[in-house]
Length: 411
Image 1 (cartoon, rainbow, N blue to C red):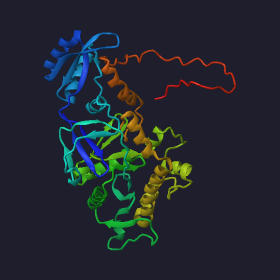
Image 2 (image 1 turned 180 degrees about the vertical axis):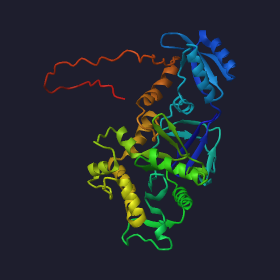
Image 3 (image 1 turned 90 degrees about the horizontal axis):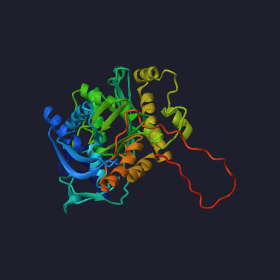
Image 4 (image 1 turned 180 degrees about the horizontal axis):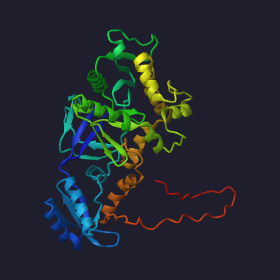
């Protein structure tokens, strides 16, 4: 398998493809043959080598590599059933590839001489190393409106130089010309079918070519609904760079969205990562708190209000739709959460679109240094390990002090 990296350079965007990489874990030398037998039984191809690693308890371990992530997943399951401990088996291939090279956010790579003249830059067997580099990103805020059956009414897009609302013309307005207000901040474009609505959205987004797609609850709602509607209309969800298809999947209680060459940032996740606290993280409430503004629809039953506007006053619905994208952009401008997530990526190696991730951030920095000392990380006990009783709070001695040392672990 290969690791694919999309890199924003000062002049363009490049797709880097690594040399072949393999899912990796470690097993105690005493259990290496047992693991080989398990792999043979489940027809999983593995390689086992002694690279001189030990656990922190000084137990010698062997390095285990599988051909695919599926084989690694099967191996973990069967090893657990046989009471064989696998160390670091949950580290993703892409994460290990980057952390072992100490790459955190910025990367330096070898490129051909005509690099800047190539419209779609793809570099195979890429050679990379860490570097210090900061860039700027283009972003596009999106928002959709639909009914309870996920049948689309409109899609709004707002970014620097692009402010558009795509509206599926309601049945009673077919044959009429729908126009926004003369001083409207956006262009209203009507289409005659949901398929045409999606195709127009794909065209505008790919032409604008943003580095970041942002919105409010954009992963769990907007991106997920758009993917399902594209499928229902027999369309490819090709909103990635180089005409690549995006993917949407569920994992536990999260919606994971992967758009090749683009980052998807949800405003709610971003503000929670920045430790903002609100009584509610709804767009209406956060906008009121940060901007002193509200959404255009204040009805208790917003869905019914949206449906009523669509069928009776679609231009008012378009206004409401576009206002939501504007609010998301202005909250970003106010809080600078894109800059925050970019800096977090440079410091910890975490993907900008990833919410939370304090443990992953620690591992990204800690594991490669541990490996350089020929040690591997341990595993968490099934019972969770020893509970922390908390620290002893000393009686304070008020006053002014020099050289104050603060010890407060926060991840």
